[in-house]
Length: 85
Image (tube, rainbow, N blue to C red; front, side):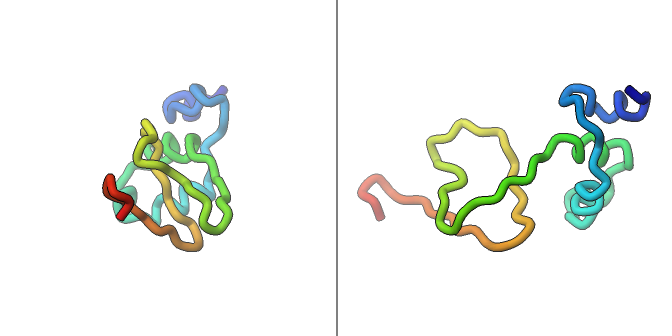
């Protein structure tokens, strides 16, 4: 394993940083000022998932620390009250 891969933290997942993900993350204002090393650390962690139309991605009851980025398409956020409205 290379030194730069170890510094990036990718060894935890036994994967290489993905330059395509680097480029996508660089376009997001939140990540645009990150160093190359920090960006590489982020780019080795994501996984791309495809969802069907109207498929639930996340529920209010989920105990998740995941972050989602929509690469294409759109999502709808719904938050119902106890009486279903």
